[in-house]
Image (cartoon, rainbow over all chains, first blue to last red; front, top):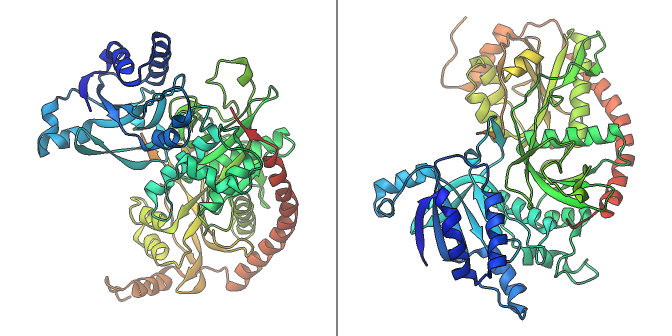
Length: 489
Length: 66
């Protein structure tokens, strides 16, 4: 292998030679590959340094190579080129001592594999969200990936991405692969999955050849994830009325806020059908819309936290990771007319198999709980922010919440809770603008039929179990920091 | 009132109940609230079953190829 460091700006002049030497690309293929790399790396922060490593063995490309490309007449090379990114100047000496290896870790911002597949050279990559030159905060679901760069093991947090090669894997396989990379890196109960293994799962239910790939339908994608251990939930926008569209996007926002990256299916009337991972959102740029979604018995109005303007972050195999788009115009980064007017018409949500209550029911139950609570204690105009969390993460966040009193912490940390909870945080336009809530309901996510509200913390009142008996306590509750499952960059 | 031990969460909870557990809303009212929620959710669950039955059909018609 050959490893060379350079300022990122010099990559443009160095890359053509590396492509020709490693992949035996002709001039035309080289130009196309350079264009793809340039487009993929545009909009990165200034001052980056890049390491270019040739003869790199990439597990994802090798899966496609051994199962497909090697059986062709034309020669496809086995090895790839890997670009690794650092947020500052480094030298090869930095790779030779423990102390400077720490510096490398501090500066490491991810890697991109370039594979020898003409026209679609961008392979597996993980980029730290801070590498994107942006003017607004990104809130992202991330996992920690390792990469051995010139002998040094480095870590990068990000969401995995690859472009499709349009032959062995198209967007359907790519999104499943990215989903499994993410979950298997974060949680030990899942396994990473290469495209050939995805094909194997579907082999017995597929009625024609699987390679070259003709894509998958939404149900096949759901089936694959179910076979891989998820308690998958699927949604569609039905007949695509404005209300059905709005409801679907609301669900997607709830799951994304919960830190569950999901697959969103989009389609338009020109025959384009595509799928992407939705992995986070930008900061909100407006306050919560005051338009109510519910009027309480005593006249107070409830508005929806997710009725605020933000762009959502896509891992789309035709663009760079974390493409920020409005959910109601998910194909806005595309310039071709065939991509015009795409709408999200379905979602495949990889839930943990122990989450039995899904988002639509949780929302209904939370709103019902507020209505009934209002009959006992009048509620003012409020906003509701619904999200799902594991109890481990929730209790960790309660214990570290700087605003909750020792009394609230004692009650919440002592509460018997299931593996997962739905948290319905209550606040006002202004409190949520400052990431603060003024109350919350906790719902048991392992009860799909029984209406189990574990606790109400509203209007300085706590209703819920204390030592296995339902109690009502008058307990002052100041505005408190909201629960976050997404990481801010 | 005696200060609770800082070593036992059970004692902390008992102390909390003694200090803050005097709300006039009784157990019966909370049970009524739960019954009312259950009644309304039953209606919701029936409607939701019909809606979700169509989702698999919708998704089976979308072949993702782009």
